[in-house]
Amino acid sequence: MHVRPSGHEGSSCHSNHIKFINFAGVNRRRETAPRRLAKCLVLDGRQSKRLSELWPCLGDRNLCDRNSLTMESVQADNMLIDRAAAPELDRARGRASLVDPFGRAISYLRVSVTDRCDFRCVYCMAENMTFLPKAGLLTLEELDRLCSAFISRGVRKLRLTGGEPLVRREIMTLFSSLSRHLRSGRLDELTLTTNGSQLGKYAHEIRAHGVRRLNVSLDTLDADKFRAITRWGSLSQVLAGIDAAQEAGLKIKINAVALKGVNDDEFPRLIEWAHGRGMDLTLIEVMPLGEIGDGRLDQYLPLSIVRARLAERYTLEDLDYRSGGPARYVRVAETGGMLGFITPMTHNFCESCNRVRVTCTGTLYMCLGQEDAADLRKPLRASESNDLLFAAIDEAISRKPKGHDFIIDRSHKRPALARHMSVTGG
Ligand code: SAM
Ligand code: SF4
Image (cartoon, rainbow, N blue to C red):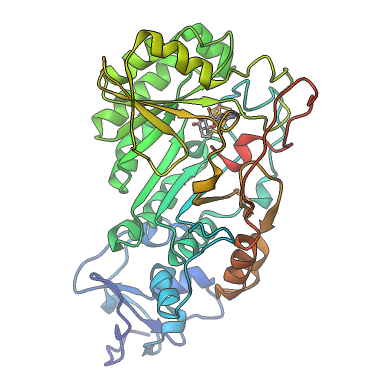
């Protein structure tokens, strides 16, 4: 069976380069839906493109031009269009953007693509962690579909996190497929938070998929201390990853968790090192998430104290700059760089919260500091249409709480939340 070029083909084109067509009878019974849908993509004219860029599950195959496709008939049909066009279709159907009961528009989605990690940072994980069974994880195609659904409802910034996002197998295919939303202008930013251990391997590829800036977590520049904090990590590997990312043209922000008696003597060194390399630095207060074995009270260091100490040494100029996140920034006059403070414990940043988080099993958390969550995996898998998924998202957003109420004091021996930060991602 060979393509019979038909007047109908490509009539539902929604992209500069790609024509979408539906092959009415092609192997429909034998092929999985994504495979069939991806087959429906024909690049305009003579171009060919790696299918894996368009639909990760198809692997590394070339999308052939229309003459070599086999099918019985060609018929335009918007209902079977590839997911790449779904956000436009959803918009066309008039779906409203996501606004919570307090009038906050949800424009920022963080997705934890795995709860696994190659480190075991002492404030984040216990040494012996039980990770989620792989069978419960959303596939990369499902993660793509979920992210795309949020993008169609007004999410403009997407951060992949974890666990360590770069240890998830084939994760580049997700970056690759999501990058189409950057090209289409529906997404302003695709970014990630990483421990840096895999940047040496992936920095150039990440850049090629449209990532322009990323956060690297680094709490110390002392190799022994680094090993003690991360339990399993290598400082030199992370520093080499940072080098690779900067060489690839990625802008980096360093995140450091402030740990009492561990790295609190190092902040000036971290500031001067980061700013000297053109990287901003953000300090984070330890949050009481997950059972970690050691007492958190011992780790907790209020950033109000850190800031006061730094102000004795540097000129800290308050800035209005907001990165879209909860950090408050100052400029360090002596270095010229920016220093951020994320203070969930001493200062509640919830009033301007524009974000929600999805785990690798498709659980939506409307607030990092609350247990309430919604299962999106079930509606995602229940149907190829996004209607059930949207209904579940709308219902969840209508429950987004006003804010969190973390507490660390001697009367609260248990973590405020049983879930680890690696489940929802930082
Ligand atoms: N593995 C990646 C990394 O370390 O950057 C991404 C995930 S990690 C959970 C994201 C951020 O959360 C990191 O900057 C980490 O330092 C921070 N983090 C983890 N547990 C935390 C906790 N209990 N309190 C405050 N920050 C935490
Ligand atoms: Fe892994 Fe990041 Fe948690 Fe450290 S903070 S254990 S690198 S997920």
